[in-house]
Image (tube, rainbow, N blue to C red):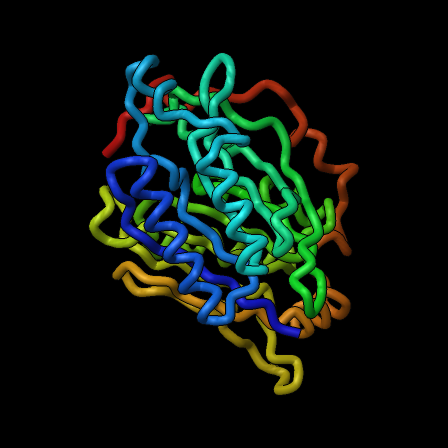
Length: 291
């Protein structure tokens, strides 16, 4: 059983209406290419623009029940294709960096806000989410349990580990940053250590501080039928804008999860108490200085 994931590696427009139009056209293209689910890059509603002025920021933020988000809900039902739409979400006291997933009937199945905001950078003006969630996606030919993490969430092993412990087989991850060898290695590792697939959608080259390279790591490191190592990278998009289709073989993933030793099988949680220590240490020197 295969799940086809459309990674909408798009350049945004300058207004909410432009991004609505660009996004809807990309979803139609994704459906024409056979996608079961379409994923946008991070904060698509405003092209990951984060003004530091509080009033300007609030003007850009939109509600989950806004017409922008509802248009994608209706489009999911019209196309009979799941859609994960990302947006700067209205919230008190500060906006959230959020994604909402609608299934192929237009039903909302998951609403997630970025937990690990980049508080050392422009995202200092945002609030962070408070949990990770898993939902079931019925894509017609079958079902898959999935969750989401957004960009910087990837750098914390706990993000993917919590999703795995809650039953996720797949993580759909919106992104907005340069995807270089180390960040790609983090995604590969999250997939490997948790025996799950990770699909990431980034902005293309041309968007500030982004370079494409949207990916799918399928979480299956061994070719069991050949008794040999295989590359978990099913797809790595180029830098250019486009709608890229990544195919996840769910049967192979589930076979691997049933037979291998990673994930939850040999954990020793009684030795991990330090992970729940609420005393978070400051960075060295107490101040972050970007390169």
